[in-house]
Image 1 (cartoon, rainbow, N blue to C red):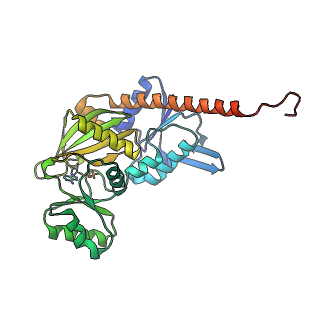
Image 2 (spheres, helix red, strand yellow; image 1 turned 180 degrees about the horizontal axis):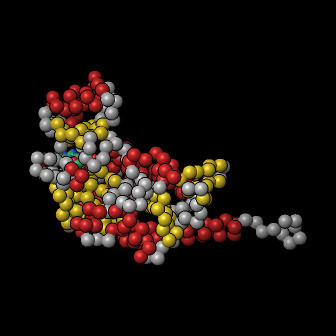
Image 3 (cartoon, protein in one colour; image 1 turned 60 degrees about the horizontal axis):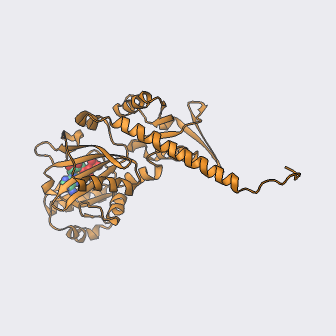
Length: 317
Ligand code: ADP
């Protein structure tokens, strides 16, 4: 397979591991900086050039698109899709996953457990909006935050109100959630590849902190998921449309609750803690699916040409 990895930095652990796992399995792999891909778009014709040369024959692309380059990165990925390249995470699915509000609506629509969430626009509605949630503590989250930045715990109603007012003053998009106290500062990261959770870890926040993100000093350990947790993680990834996803869950009295579905989950923490070759699982999934997509395309091409009326003998070509 000829594989491209869209990543801004070839030296990142996750990128390096994917390159290594692909080479170990005999694939040809190249890391492309999405910001150095430029595109030609014409009716039915799509081209991508990279550092002065046209890209061709890329069978599969693994996007590792950071939040700061979501727009341009997904445009490059869409161009690959239009050129018939297989990707486990489509541009639309990545865009969906980057918008917490949209993800929550989609998942709630499918009956997936999540912390009860409210959002609204007009400052005049703040009081009633917060009353829809019930008693504090409340968790206030910036819609497009990541790694725990922009996640605030408000223990009293007056704090919820002031934070909401401050965020409105900044024209920020945010949502407010019930605080799941019984999660006790821990969450579960479930690494989904295709129709399996290939690895899972529990992250525990440091004392005095409720956010368990490793970037915020959280400590990770290996964990065995329950069947319900595994099913919830797979269902959430499927609903957002991601074949590769990091699904974060909270353990609650109501069962597993989804916090987030991440489309570029990091490999370093999960491989280090669990010892699972997650990069290998990703490459094997991508190679399998790229072959399935190529075979389906070839079959539909054959069907189309078989359906075309044959030129009669003697007729002009
Ligand atoms: P980010 O995308 O920035 O990581 P999350 O929504 O995953 O934001 O929240 C960061 C962390 O805060 C979570 O890993 C979890 O430990 C904690 N947390 C988030 N929401 C809640 C909640 N509703 N109740 C309890 N803890 C929460």
